[in-house]
Image 1 (tube, rainbow, N blue to C red):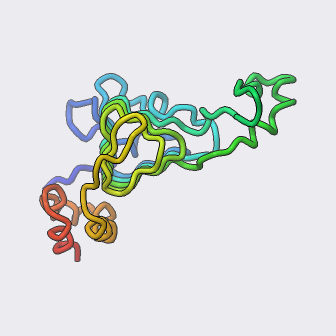
Image 2 (cartoon, helix red, strand yellow; image 1 turned 90 degrees about the vertical axis):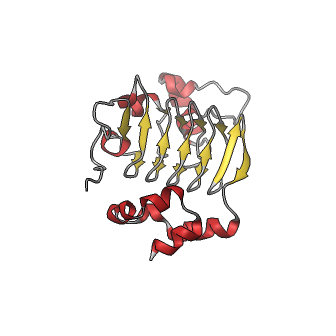
Length: 211
């Protein structure tokens, strides 16, 4: 039995539009879990350059395992923020010279929302936009075209601009159970053994094979 390798950039033979991000990404500020993939018929290999934008600061983008990212998903990082401490939001500092010297402390003092964190087993739809510092819980679904400006709960489904919670996939008790099971942390051999239950079973059925 062949198990897909998490180190294979192109997990689907002769299908270059789908790439695993862990072996692709080289920027140390972007951390990607195993088997998370990005699908794009034109620019799949340019994920770092085209899909993670304004990554100038210390903040990281962290994405868990087994996530599915559709074409056009973009992450706006905190480097896109402009100071709102005074009347103007114009970024004088970036042009250097006297402007930079006089305003560097203002630019460095701009507030940050911290790292952008996407959990495990998250599905992000076509052309969704994730804003700086957002945290998306495990098992969440982001509808196509959404603009995510606030945290998304585990196993929540959000959509719209700004994205709003449409519904929860499971009850609070079931979400708690799934978080404890954390199937994405299993060895890939165990994931493979129970892949049908992971794909189509209930939380209770998954719990039955978890031990």
